[in-house]
Each structure stands twice: as structure tokens, then as C-alpha cells.
Image 1 (cartoon, chains in turn green, purple):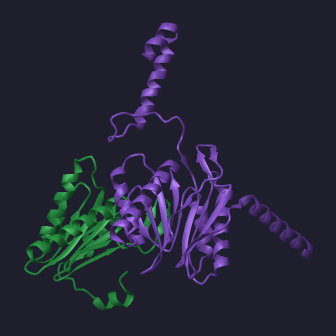
Image 2: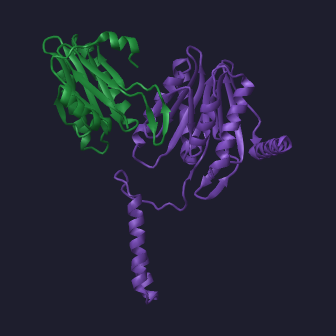
Length: 164
Length: 263
């Protein structure tokens, strides 16, 4: 199943996702990108039902960009997260709910970094670390044990292996 | 009214009540939140296929079998599963045969309208997005189409995009769709290289479809092969996979004879 993880530090949010797009037992793509850029400082990671993910994420992406065009300044990560949650909640009890699990990672110039966890029932939580998928069962305990808010980002390690 | 008639002419009302129960529970299983009335299917829809497409140095190859199955019946042994949309785009179809035929026509119409209105041809990516958005309202209904758009864009070269009625839209270098796709993937993943020549690529595609039809009961009969380049699509003559099977048997018996001689 598709896996997302996010970790918030003092001045950064680190997010990662797997690259597989699967259809039952077949891996249709090995290089699928699950991240959607909402703005220069906000990323939306989206997994869930085929079709729903791209449709919902692109809808949010275009609306966040429209806000910037109309008002001249960008939505803050908290506002973008709440906007996403509201849309998900509105569709939840309609005839066409979107079955998507999301992580929204952003950096606010005044509030600092923020990681927002959202699931398909449109619950929203700002969390220091979060994960989606079966992998979450295995990694959340590791994060509980070793996470510290003052963790530093080792950029050299990331650029060496190359983020996918 | 049917229930009353049965009661009038038959004393075994107990069994008939069970029959009506069966009918209700069966139609309940077809009942969807989107439909106000349910219609019982007279026969299973035609599904089951092997289609594939891949990109290599010489362009795009699209291949498919030609069997339309309805449950265990071969409804038609000579279906066209690869349909040209315009000179530089073909679409391979799988899923429900009726839905695919309809949606291919709708797509052709919309692409042509776009061309007439905007005086330029829509890109393959744009075509895929248009199709995906047209199919979106039918998500959750029984519409079942899984199409692979294989084409050549003037600006960006060869393109292969998979679109299905679930809403998925994936661009890639190699796709196989249908009940026979796992078998085709096995052959393709093993033999596919970017540097294949045109003849090697065509024989690889033919081999993949043949192996899939050999194992999958719902694929078979003939194989259609299309090759798309910057100059447009070209179609090979439809080949009966029976011939391929006998060629393969001949090769195997020759190998066995050679092995026995060596031993």
C-alpha cells in the first residue's frame, strides 16, 4: 500500500513518499510522484483511491494558486490545510466522497514549519510527525521513540542519494 | 403480478417464495446508490483481454488480442481492440467492450471538435486529461473502461498514457492492461530495451500477447499490432496466434530432438 511520512523540525519539514502506482497486484509505474506543489512553501502529499487522489489534489492545487492570483499573496499553510479539510468534509457526505489520505507540509514566514495530517474522513491534526499507509504501523513507534523537536536536517545526505 | 400468478397455478408456494427472495437479493447486489432502478443483467458483460503498449527508440508499439468474452463464452473472436483516433494517436481498449466502443467514439468526436475550434491538434496529455475528466462523473457506476492512449506529439515525441474509468491517469513507457496483462508483463519486462529495432520490438509485442493468450482463457484468437512514429500510425496485418503456437511447438520439438541427439 502507498506510504507517506512527514517529520517537522525547528526550521524545516521533511516529507517522503514511495514511488509506486499499483493496480491490484500489478505495479503500473515505479516512478510515480505523489507530491503536489500548492505554492513555493507548501507541499501536498496525497494517497488513496485511484483517480480521487489526482482529481482532489489538483482541485486544491489550482484553487490555492487562484487565491494568490486574486489576492496578490499566498495562503498560509494553516489556511491551506483548513481549506483542504473543509472541501474534503463537504464531499464526505455527498454522493461522491473522495477517499484520500493527505499530508500537508508548509513553512509559514511568521509561524515557522508546520505538518498537517488529514485522513479520508477529513480529520485534521497538526503534528510533529505523521505517516500514512501500512508502513505507518511500523514507523510511528520509531518516531515516538527517537523524535526530538530540535532535530537537525542533514542536507548533505539527501542530496547525495538524491530525493526521488 | 408474477408472484400472484405463481401462487394461483402452483401449490408449491414455499419454493416460489424462495425464488422471489433470490431475485430480490440478486437485484439488491446490483443496486447502486446512484441508480434509482435496477436492471438485471441478461448475460455477463464482455471483459477479458490482453492489450499492451510500449515506447522504444523507434516509436510506440501497441498490440492487443482480438477475443471478446462474455463470461465463459467467446462472444466474438475477431474484435478490433486498437482503434485509431487520428493520424498520430491510437487507443487500445479493455474492460467492457460496449463501454470502450462508446467512449472511443466520444473521444474521437471531442478531439475533432477541439481541432476545428482551436485550429490545432490537442496534445496526447491533453487528450488523456479530457477523457479522464469526461469519465469522472461515471465513477462508482458500472462503466468499465481501461484505455491506453498510444501516440506521437509533435512537440514532445512518443507518449503512452493509461486512462481508466476509476479515474487513474498514468503516463509511462510500458503498460499492459487486461486479464492477460500479468503474463504479458512477464515477457515484456524481461525483453524490453530502449535500443530494440522495429522488427525486434514487433516480435516482442507479438510474443507477449501470444504468451498471455496461451495462459489466459479470456484472451486469444488473433493479434493486432500497430506502430506509431512521427509520420503517424501503421497497422500490421492481423495474425492468427494459432500459427504462432505451431511455430512455437515446432521450435520446442526441434530443441528436444537436438537435446536427445546430444545425450
